[in-house]
Image (cartoon, rainbow, N blue to C red; front, side, top):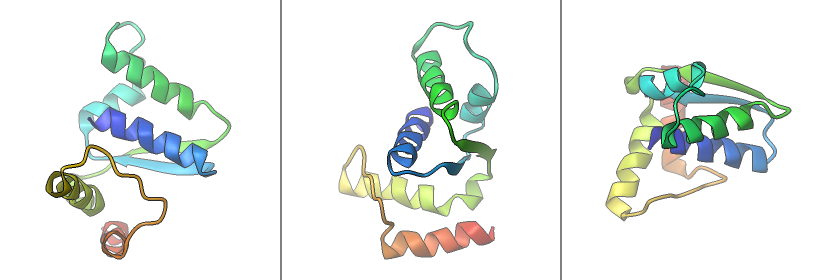
Length: 109
């Protein structure tokens, strides 16, 4: 799930014109997969990491950062929102007021 979210987030960032992106994850496994060369394996995870690597090679700056789960209020709230609303995917180009408030907390952590 985390790799898919990273991939979709990078596509959304690229498509909306962002060219300097910091992609934060609290998933150590996803972070390691993306930082290391996984081309030797042949499975769905490798295909998704290849797609993410291809996106990251485009003409832009993408920084991948591993953060603590406690510093990821926005992601936690959005995951809970998805469960309550029973949705698989939601994309907002402009965050709602609740998300804006949580972004402040994440920025200060």
